[in-house]
Length: 164
Image (cartoon, rainbow, N blue to C red; front, side, top):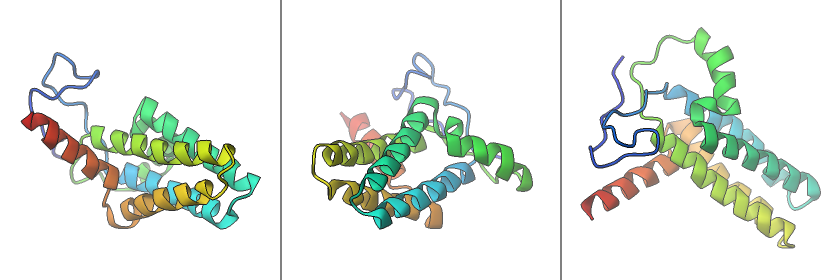
């Protein structure tokens, strides 16, 4: 097992403020599992279309993102399910990853689904399946290919702000 890469010393978060020690690494398969669960839920929203069931299910997905942002990916509902039921059946991970990019990705998912939910409740019914479809693409890419769009956005943002 290797540890997560050490971030630049100038980059700190509330969890690491005043310290150059990165947070403990997480099993990268956990966020992929969570993305798979999220993709299934978002696909159901897209299939439900513009009705109240779609809006309610998108609200559930948005709440799952809230938990992921607040507690980190490992503390999300999907993360707990992965840790309790899936990870014990797997070999240890080859390496651990920094939990901050996946947490940022949860925030991006929250913004997308939250915006769709707010617009849907405000009367723009098509916003619900459109927001779900956008989030579904990102969740599917992570679940199927291990490509996390939100994580890549995090890294680009870090690079852009570290040059300033």
